[in-house]
Image (cartoon, rainbow, N blue to C red; front, side):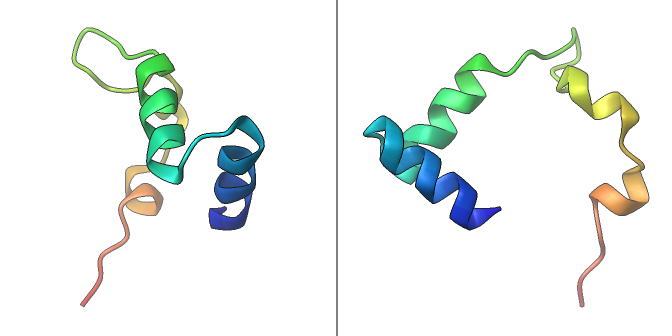
Length: 51
C-alpha cells in the first residue's frame, strides 16, 4: 500500500503528506465522524493489537 500511495502522490505532483491531506479532505464521514466506508470493517481486523 505504501508503494501505491507514494506512486499516486508522485503522479499528482503532491508529497505523500499532501496526498494524505487531500484524501482526508475528500473522505465522506457520517454524523459521528466515522468514514462511511468503515461500516463493513471487522473491528478486530481493522485494529490489530501490538505488543
